Length: 68
Image 1: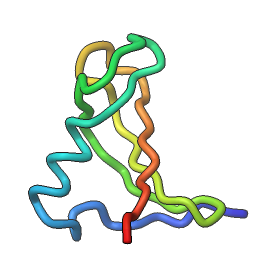
Image 2: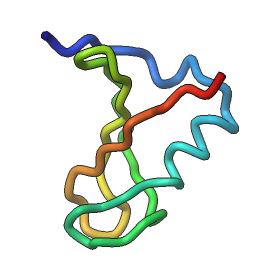
Image 3: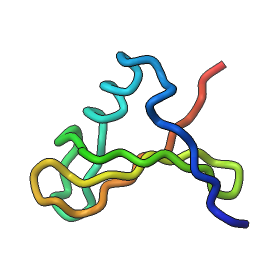
């Protein structure tokens, strides 16, 4: 399946900030370091936000799980 770009800025400001803070960096092996330059997309029916780790600059990806 192909990647479908989504508009991260359409999310509520507080929701955006939560997603930017609540991250995991595979390089730093730490949670909640934060990310910059977020890009939201859908892939195989799942939604992701990808950006750069605030500490090391490597790619950090967060899967969004919508709660009912």
